[in-house]
Amino acid sequence: MISMSAKELFEFFQEHSICESLTKDEVERLIPYLQEKEYQGGEVISDAGEVGEALGFVIQGKVQFTSSDGQDTAPVGKQGVGTLIGEMSFFDRKPRNLRMEACKKGVKFLILTRPMYDRLKVEEPFMAVNILENAIVSLDTLVRHMGDDISALNHYMHGFGKH
Image 1: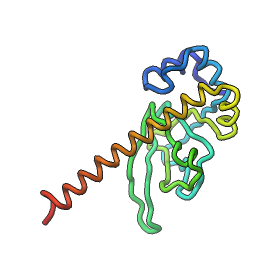
Image 2: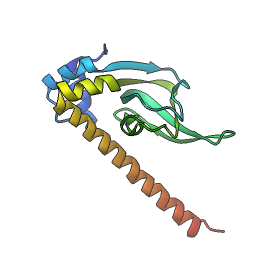
Image 3: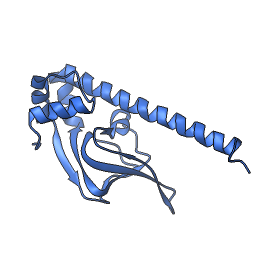
Image 4: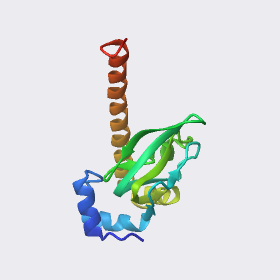
């Protein structure tokens, strides 16, 4: 059960451009498929090497992604309210490359587990497609930012930052 009403969730989706083509009635029908999950600051949400069994919409707080080489750990990014997380490993069923932790103030998600997504595909295909489209947009944004980051690093290494 989630603490948001259908109206609040609908408004949240509209505000953050998540599943914005769903009607209020459809959002109300989506609620039983979702779970609410909270993590305290610093708590590990998922670890590198795990396969994602759920994807989530961040509704409060932020998550931090870290990379580790076995000796050192380095932060590599954050995601906040209105973002979809966990979609890459959820859909490709491959192990995660990064650890995901709740930032200092904690984080709250609405999660969709794999079994509930499988049910949603059969029972409410339009909603399942809508969530899949959001995952595609989320991954597209990630790839575009990564391209910008690589371009900036390349410019630094071969341009003005080169010593």
